[in-house]
Length: 428
Image (cartoon, rainbow, N blue to C red; front, side, top):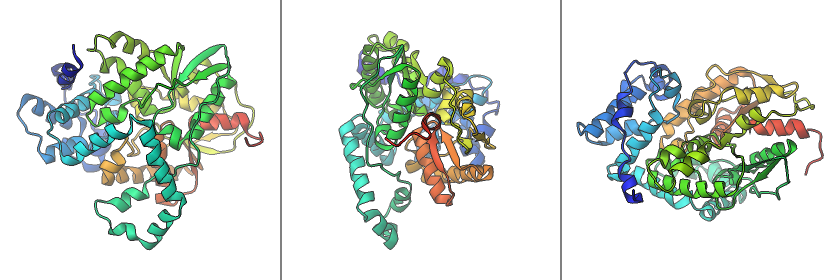
């Protein structure tokens, strides 16, 4: 089957759509339904909309498309569903169908275009974040905020600017690999090296401490998760093929990922490329190798840290780790191994924080409603450290601390583990 024909099959299957029996178990797990109380903004409501589009009983009006775009694709409904409805796949293919037909609003098409032009291209992305760092470090950001000139700009620019992450001075550079009794490849991704180099560095140190060699294939690219969520499965497939080749050529036993959204996408490459005769088998083999860093460390077993960290920590489940990958216990087990850490659970630890890739910019109002709910939950724990497992969650929660004027810091689980191993060491 040609790659052009592959794009034509991107529509929800009758089998997937008919799997929903409209029982309603998903309702109390859906963040947008809980906020709005509208059936049409619930998982089963959106499935009904997509079924109507597939059958030709409805047109993709701006109102209808907005209900689909309000979905976070957090997949909490999949955890709750007794019929195992693959809602994530239905939503991704439903959006892809509309994008391929050119039946989405201009803003959505611009989103797809921007993702295509940026995330598959590391140099362009590095340039963009370099300019953002210059904006933050030059004093221009402070000036614009102090004078409130940003508020004069249209299209919610001031609000979006307030959510921008801090861009650190250095980016991640993969150190020379050390030989070990086992070997893994690290997905460096697109945003992580630029915003959270510290997380990659902690990941490498923890793995090497356990005699595991870490390599980072230079041919790898963005995982394609953002393109998948935006309905651009063509770009996602191109990225998937490149990554499958890069990591299989590395000849390692596992592909370790410290970004939950990326890990979810990589584990589903077999499904994404199932109709590609050249890549179907390779993609399935690759997906079977993918492990979240917390999942991998829990499987291989770790040396218990000896240095206590007297922190009060709460853990925010990253949606695509807990609901898509079904990894819930491993991050908590790793945190409990660290001496003196007090782990305090949130009331709703697996409720989406509102990040959801580019959702925090595309659906800012709903994103902030969910974030405010999350920060109230976090404040009630009294935690001084928020641990999570995804860069999007980290950015959103950092913005939430600023927005709510709360003390504390946000870290990846593996960073706390690394800190416990190296606490008291002289700084590098």
